[in-house]
Length: 163
Image 1 (cartoon, helix red, strand yellow):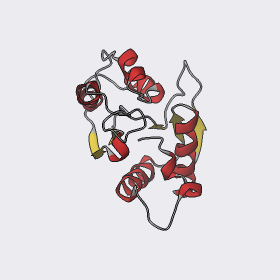
Image 2 (image 1 turned 90 degrees about the horizontal axis):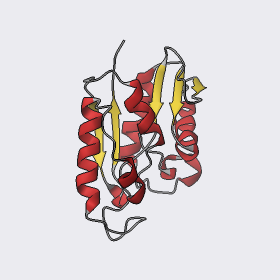
Image 3 (image 1 turned 90 degrees about the vertical axis):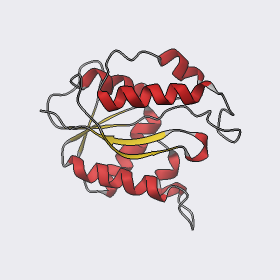
């Protein structure tokens, strides 16, 4: 789930420019149940906490390097922010292949994916994603609820289930 500030109520306007994203995030948050651990950078955690609160879901904070046992995880991050001329980082052609690779790694729970330095260049928010790839059992398939790049930033809402 992305940590885009447009998902916060304080950023809402008369029209919702991220309605489809918001609905996918709220569905995913509600699906998690209770006792959710939020994993991400400070902005992502802020957005995650807000969405959990809106859904009436309790949360625990994640403190690296040791994840808490049990519960559900809400991982906040996004792909590159350089997918168009109007993107926050302007267009960088490398962003398309990067996002394709990251999506494939997330969809297949590939803990060996390691393009974090390029992600930094492309303004991707990878703190939570880095932790997620370490938590997921290899090969755990993802259900993709949202996959788009409004504002030139790649956002996904994905779910994994494992025991």
